Image (cartoon, rainbow, N blue to C red; front, side, top):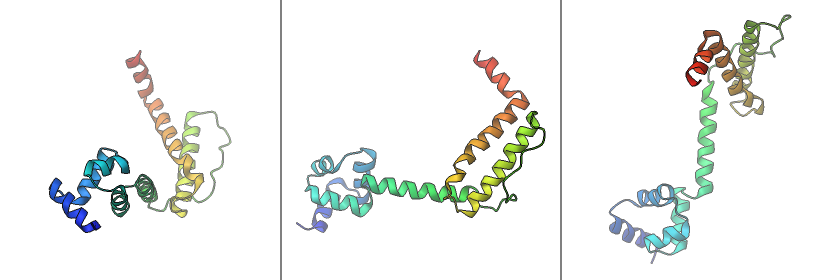
Length: 153
């Protein structure tokens, strides 16, 4: 039998398109080529061909997810930020407001690097950490952290 003949038999049996059948078997049920071929009653070689054709092989799925994450990261900071140089430390760095200013400056700096590298610079890996730090400082200043401790305690 040829691939088209196998396709016709499987689609008639399951009353679904081959893409939906393969998605259910490969992604939803997480079967490998041997298990999927047994379930459909076809040769493993045919099943592997269909997996590759519909991009349902594990490495293809992982690659597609990685590309999608890169596209999302690129658009995360899509407008050009203001700051272009590395921020300087304030002369007195003993207050919470100074810390918040420094963290804000670092966020702007790393957003600029992220924007110029189109999301591919390793330096910008710290950006989520600084954004989280800024939110923690803000929560501390607003008294939300103390309230959270009181609720948990």
